[in-house]
Length: 91
Image 1 (cartoon, helix red, strand yellow):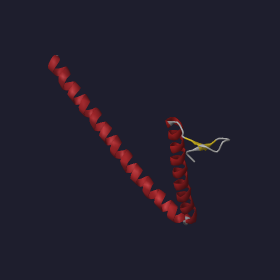
Image 2: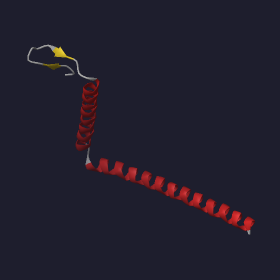
Image 3: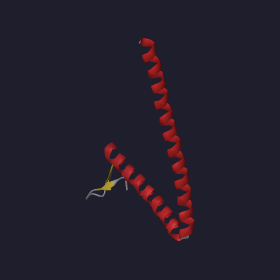
Image 4: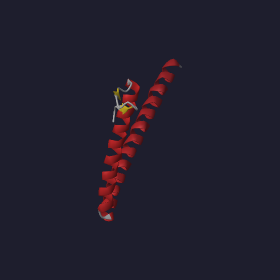
């Protein structure tokens, strides 16, 4: 598929850009086929099993979100503490 045929049936080489585009299309096709297979397997599984998996994912996501918020709060609090100490030292 990388080579194209002209009216003289002589194969011509693709330019590097054309070959890169063809390679990207091949990669896209492969990814779409993988996605199709995953969606097919999900469609075959019982709904309860899928929902249980989504609940577990939701709990994990919620935990990560909580930990991220705590980390951000800790950083902000530390910056306020250090900022307060610097302000007292200057005054």
